[in-house]
Image (cartoon, rainbow over all chains, first blue to last red; front, side, top):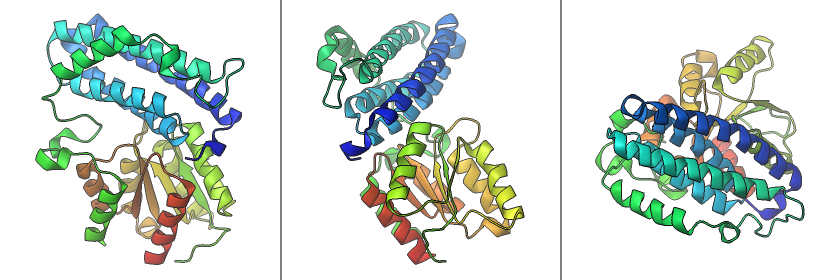
Length: 176
Length: 133
């Protein structure tokens, strides 16, 4: 989306909506933290919730927040398929941190003196140790294919790959 | 089926920011008769009631990933009824997995648009849908 649509009103809306989603995300993480052995698959719900935020962020040109949400989404979906309480506990801790960082990023959107030009940048928030944990986590999860809200029962092999708009348009031609 | 500025449109998305963005884009294209709903469960009775009142929605734009009732579930529900079979349905998604697309195509979706998208792409999609309809 062009930047002219990122007006203050939309940023305020996004900020408010994001905070409602943060509460949902934290509730899910608390449930998983309370009983990782039983509730590990709820991390998929985390992925689903943060996916909603990702789509909107990307659509209004908040690419950094969008990408950060995308990472959270992938981790949530993938980790939700791993039944290993010790591992789940680590994932939950990392995702709690991810939510905190997202809060700072979205909070900065409407902070005094904020403009559209990048006050929401990662550079202004210390993320070095967090990124290294994400890299570690990403390595642990690299062999799990499913990373979205697709119905797992219908996803296998090549059909699990992400499609861009061009791929979809090609697919549409087959159906028309 | 023709595309006209007075066309009655419903935008369904759980994120009001996203609804506002799409509404702005549609407004730039000249569409003004726009209703909003925050998920499939809220939209379904609105769509049914509009039909019963003799002023059905002529175009549905729905997000895929929503709580309560997803865009796919709404699509399937609507396409069960003969009177909604030909209502154009554009699915908006940040998800773009082939399995999802195929499921939605089989369920009767008119077209797909992947977030983020520009007003130009949305316009192209709408024109394509109504050209093919």
